[in-house]
Image 1 (cartoon, rainbow, N blue to C red):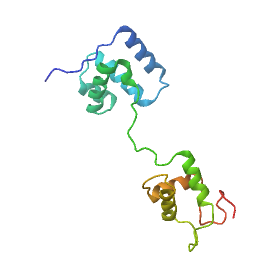
Image 2: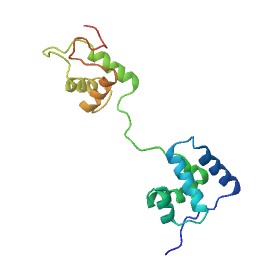
Image 3: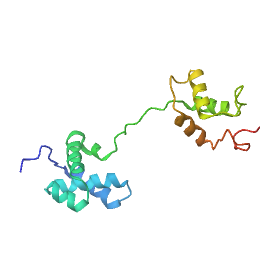
Image 4: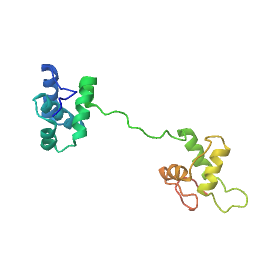
Length: 155
């Protein structure tokens, strides 16, 4: 079996902090699991033993060891999760809702998601926008442009 690249060697202060964290148990489950992984790794348990004891994946144990070596107790904290940036700002969303409450364009019975998406592009809020994004913005306000009593705007 190859020697571990990332070895956990806790100082007395770090160990006390982790034990106190686990003992209180008033943190997020992921943070507590990472603390338990570090404590058991410091006691000399193998990754397989830690995986069995804590019911986590091998990759989780390896990643936690690596993060501890690189970041110390910062390994307990969540990293920002990737995700797409918002297409519209709060003000632009408010403007979109206001547009949805106005009478429909000439020749249309009511605003559709496609028409609203086209209007967002026309107003220059975004180069492109999906109808689903428009739907989610309207759903936040419980808006229903086709309904006579949508709760957002009076007709």
